[in-house]
Length: 362
Image (cartoon, rainbow, N blue to C red; front, side, top):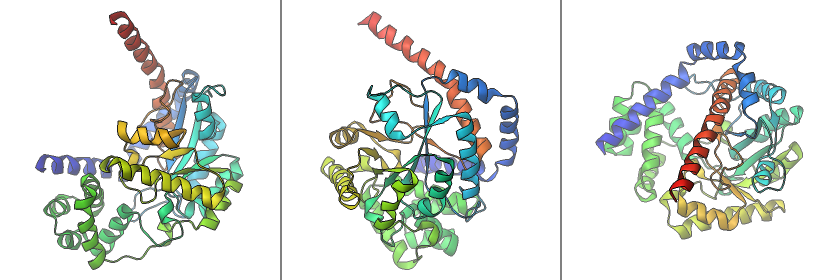
């Protein structure tokens, strides 16, 4: 486990640096933008779709630690960029194209939101409607209309309010203590501890979370509040389609098959009962899937998305649709899309070469 802790800490330090020290990187990215590379990327990206994913859209542009986050203003800038340079399509239309029911879009993007936060309706939906941009919201049904927390955000609030030292002591977990002690900042401690706890089995993680909640209580705040069912039913009027995202947001690869199936069927059923529409799309919590989890999804949905950082093409498997995290900056977003679309032709050539070699040796 020691090597694993070292790897988690290194990853958290790196993520902290990338999140909080963006000014120098954006100078390079603005140079790429001014060089018009993004226009070349769009010409090469025929038959490619970038599926973007978001979580919250808040009324401010900085988080607890001074890190950039999505705000209404930033989202508006990003939509202005996307509608000017790309075709913005529904995720369901991408799925239909992959099934051969319509032409595959060119140089396109599709927008998705995960979890079901209330700010998706209050802040994101009006901006999307103003630009005429459709989106898909994947709903974690067990949180709708409750005061519950997504535990990763809950732990962040605990560390912010009580300090990493207090957090480590209450957890009574030596690895949490080591990560908190060795993290160069409180934000790094958040990233490291959340990643470590995600890797634990539900049985090992539950008592740690119970101790933390008992001794370090935090009330749900507006930024982490979930939609009500009445509010979920408002979203299609703003151009949203709805997908399922489980009931309790577990990491499905850690569960036995019958529990995976329960999470999928219950979330699908609850959405159908509350909205009158059966969802056909699914999002794997944390982006984690494997052959067994995807096989369950195939029985109950038409397609499923993860968080693999690449674009889609006509050969992309329906139950392994990659998505790209939309960074909270329009220049960085365009830089990410440029890199991915420029890489797409090379990836296609590599895949064709591999398929040809298989045919020659079979």
